[in-house]
Image 1 (tube, helix red, strand yellow):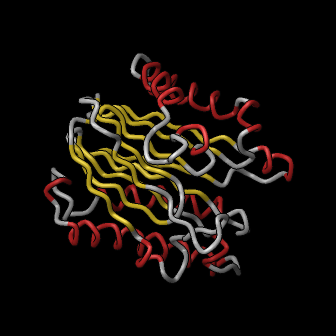
Image 2 (cartoon, helix red, strand yellow):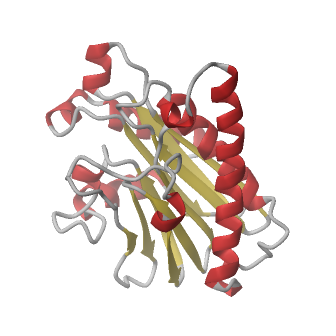
Image 3 (cartoon, rainbow, N blue to C red):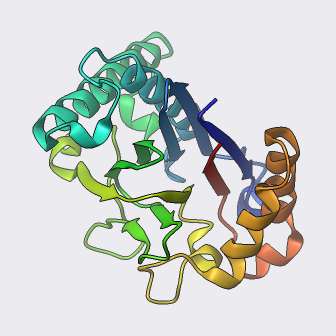
Length: 251
């Protein structure tokens, strides 16, 4: 494999107290030298957002890697070509989710979730993003981090969802290029301690020790360590939200 991917989700204290499941989900697929990784955060106000997050993350990751248009080098893709690939993947996921909702007497909006993802080789790639959460790339030459920032609605606690009617207008694509040290995707529950105060770079006192540790262990132990970190009760003092962190290291 060209990448080692370690990821975990931990249920937030506010969800545990209400007896709710974790509404975050993640998925990753590799084909050749290319990695597609996705994190989805289910809307707390949607009754089946955990199902939506699981479905959208796995479906989009599989669809993007399976696209005949993708090719071996994401950096060579024009932005319009990549947008077409992502839009097709999201359309397919939405269609499947709508059929599932209909079969259960639910609405698509009952499965509302955000989407943050990356398609990359070790030399760079693209972030794709609808709503909140963060995608970041740390480079091995100490260049500034490439970051795809969260997008919110009119109010601070609002955001956009791939299940919404205007998701195409909210789809943001960000190109990044350079020798990659680590790709990092996170739901907004991780952002307060994994991103700098300004929000435009990874918070090194947190992320640097994480990456150093993950570089020396296998994927199973790395994912277990991430879960232990996210589930640490001390994080409850920072956020009550669900927390998902995915770290991909070039092999």
